[in-house]
Length: 368
Image (cartoon, rainbow, N blue to C red; front, side):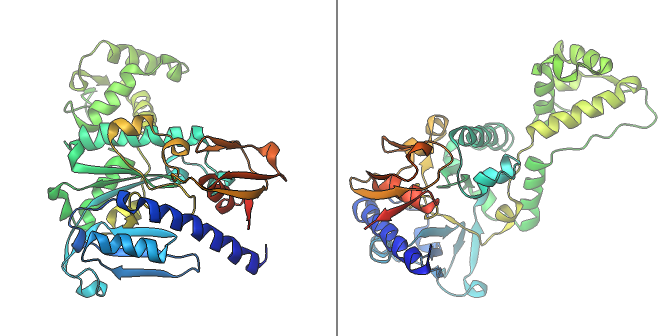
């Protein structure tokens, strides 16, 4: 596609975004301490503007309608003067953000995924990991309640979870890095060198509980090739809590392998760069992700369990666009309309939300 044609397509996509903001500005999320946030915006011409703040929510909504940014971000940090240069903003604290990105959490280098084509089954797996992070780490280990964090679909490849609870706002980069290590790496196991028997789990909470329960409920076929491991599993299944487990020297190597396998299943890959950057900008909920056309959708834990981006994160638009369908890897359904690989080469009329998704992903062109 020539530069002129790309520019023409970009203008048509801007028109779709403008339609969304004109009719849905009231739905855009207003963060707490709104006036202490820095905002950033990217545009279809490649420009990025940050160090922007707003005195009122109405000013923010007007900016979106009049300027139609491709992407919208606001800071996890609170600043005394958010619109001036970074060194003089007056940092007041920052939320603790978790970024669950498809490529990282699924531990894959799938080429389609890299290009933004994420299937429903892949979205389902990312969602399961997000729920795991919330229930088994943020709530079970950190003691957080639903009011202490904000979950949002990122609008494209995963989920953002911001911990808003005040005790976390002042954490420095070292403390934030330790949280990454806790979630993404987990504990190590140290065997006493001169003991014939030892207790691998000194207490019954945190990682000890996670690993113990995983081993207690794992199907024994996972270790069917190791007789010693099967004996340990049988022993674990009879116990009520981690601290009751006793491992002998003979069982040491087998238990190390079991412990390592449990960690590989239970750790969650999160982006360390995001969590330690106390000046990070994250996508603003209920704005549009310009690279997909999906909404950055805020979610409660109960709505997260039922969430499907193709159903619940589409722009609620009433307009239609004529498009020429190019090659697409799988069937896509948005706003109750479906386009499939068999439609390649056809000219069809679809809802503008579906048109945006296909065009921005390289699966179609809008006809003027």
